[in-house]
Every structure is written in C-alpha cells, then in structure tokens.
Amino acid sequence: MIIAIDGPAASGKSTLARALAARLELTFLDTGAMYRAVTLAALQRGLAPSDEGACTALAVGLALGFDAEGRVLIEGEAGEPAIRGAEVTAHVSEVAAHSGVRRALVGAQRTVAAEAVAAGGGVVAEGRDTTSVVFPAADLKIFLLASPAVRAMRRAQEEGRPELTSAYEADLARRDAHDSQRSDSPLLEVEDAVRVDTDTLSAEAVLDHVATLAAVRRPV
Ligand code: CDP
Image (cartoon, rainbow, N blue to C red; front, side):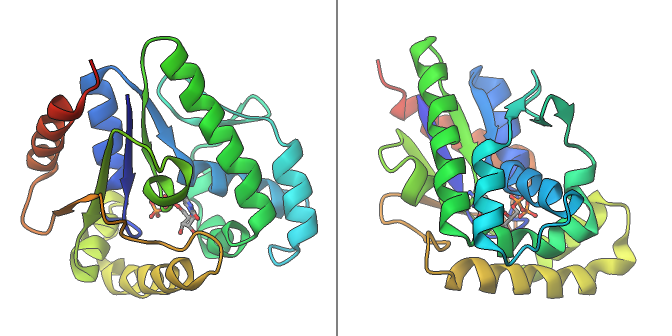
C-alpha cells in the first residue's frame, strides 16, 4: 500500500507520516530529508545552491539511505541533526527547485516504495510532490493544511524556542512561496487528495482520522 501525504511547510506531515507508518507497519519515507541531505552535502562541498549542474551531479552520485527508524543516511552516516540546521533550511528550497535534483531523488523514492511493496508492505511518503508527481497512483492521498500562525507556533515549540514564532512564520511563508511558484513540481493540492485541516485537531486526532481512511482504502 502506498500512502502519500502532501502539504505546505510545517503542516505536520512528518509527525503524521511517521506515526501512521508505525501504526500500519509500513515504511516511513521522508522525502524532505532527502532534499535536505543533498543541500547539506552541497554546502559541505562548497557548491553553490544555485548551480543546477553541480547539485544534480551530486544528487545522482550521493548514496542516500535510511536507518530502521526512517532517518536519512548520507554515505552511510547519520544526516540528523545537521540536515535540520538553519543554513540547510535557508537553501533547501533553492536546491529542491532544480529539475535534475528532483529527477534523481524521485527515482530513488520510487525505488524505496517498489522494494517495500515487493516485500509485502508499503510506504507512507511525505513531501511536497508526493501526491502529484512521485506517487500519482497512491492508494490514499492526504493534503494536510494548517494556518501559517499555527504552523509557526508548532515549529517554534518543537524546537523549544517560542520566542522565534514570528521569525518562523516569515521563513515558512518564504518557503511556501518558493515551493508553490517553482516551475518543476510546485506544491499542489491534487483533486483526489483528502484535505485535512489540522488547526483545531491534535496530532492524535489527525492520526486516528487518517488511519481510518487508510483502513478503508487498503488494497486486498
Ligand atoms: O518539514 P519542513 O516543511 O520544514 O520541510 P521538509 O519536509 O524537510 O522539506 C524541506 C524542503 O525540501 C521544502 O521546503 C521543499 O523546498 C523541499 N521538498 C521538495 O521540494 N519536495 C519534497 N517532496 C519534499 C521537500
């Protein structure tokens, strides 16, 4: 079974996808972590995030994998927590806008899913093109929404920095705009996705709701 969870930055995709994968015993596929991993590796190698050719060559050649908990491995080394750093966050949307980078990572994501399905399981994939481009034939597509203020508050609380809420709101708005306006695979609410607005729902309530939808859609 393939479940794809899409939506804007910090809408709760990761929290939901991770918990749902655990509950349904499916593989958690964090596609954003892969874009962050390529961005981190580019910065470490002194490549310009604007350099499409160099970033593409890097994405094609970089060995990305996942540990048992679904955390990204870069050339076998843990990508966390470095991939969540401010410098990576500042540049990831630019790197993720390059078509060559997207082609390489989308291919890798489909391979992960195909292997999981072949083994009798499946994936819960989250990220900004998983319902539209990566898995257009997913068994269940979710578009997760939350208002900018709520998303910024959650992200600031997650990091233990409530005083940064307004700075986060500005950063999320910047990334939403960049991700929505890029020409290759913009953030898009596809017609057959189920829209879930999480402003007034706890993480638990969102999980229960989506798990119920998944139970109905599970192929026999
Ligand atoms: O969790 P958060 O919204 O901070 O971001 P993320 O899921 O870690 O993704 C970081 C960035 O990677 C996004 O802002 C997008 O620019 C890019 N991304 C993408 O282009 N396509 C995906 N499938 C996932 C992430």
